[in-house]
Image (cartoon, rainbow, N blue to C red; front, side, top):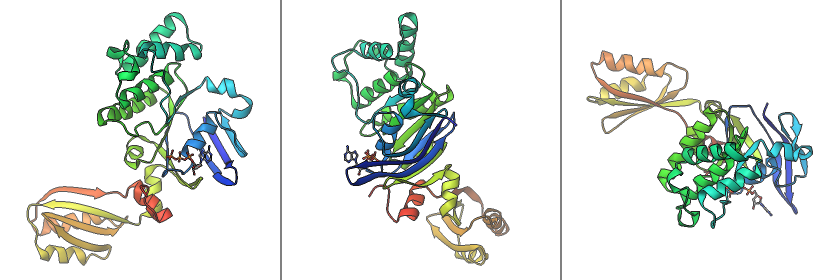
Length: 310
Ligand code: ATP
């Protein structure tokens, strides 16, 4: 186990910001902390990064309690904070040189790592420029470059795509997958469930300082879904076939939208093959078929009664 967070408690005065947060992360994962604003994501990762003290519970990195091995563990972490932390008056190269030295890199290894980080974040052409003139997305990419110079075991990114242009956003999401392939474990916090769904291998959904559910996307959606929805595009549709499909016992609803049939039925009852058989017997050609899976948004909504975006 790379990281274990057990019953973490954090109070700000009388306010309980983290209420027994518990999760663990294996080496090689992209672990998502998904939750609305104020859920406790930033507080959790500040504690993991030894930047904030906590009031109860424990955080273990490679089996060692972080509070007793702070410096040793910090060397294995790469942190991309929510607030961009770079020097506006230094060039991109000089920023990387500064952070590389903080991590103890020197000489040809430092130079090699700076070039690697610049290339990785697509900033090689801008290395001599000061971030003052960079877009928000480019600053964020430079911030990521500063955090990966020392090839950390665990990279923690706190909402790195908030308020940036779509091109940088895609670049960042692709780089996260790439960093993970190269061997880093990632913690990724976000309230954009689409991003978490796209890149994370496992997710903890956090709300009011608690983990309300965790697992793979499939495990989480299985928690709340007993039904599936088929969307079938057909060459032609008629109401007779709708009635025939409705008469299948496991199917609750069948309706026509444009040239598509929308079928909702109980999961695990072979609805796809049953519907295909009926359509084939009726001589209706299937142009496309899609089984819609419930999203993490639906999981959050079911578990809390609220939307992630509220
Ligand atoms: P966001 O997506 O907005 O960053 P978050 O999930 O990261 O939200 P936190 O920033 O961890 O949430 O905040 C959790 C709760 O603790 C919030 O209610 C917040 O107002 C409160 N909080 C955070 N930092 C402090 C602080 N220094 N003093 C008092 N309350 C705080």
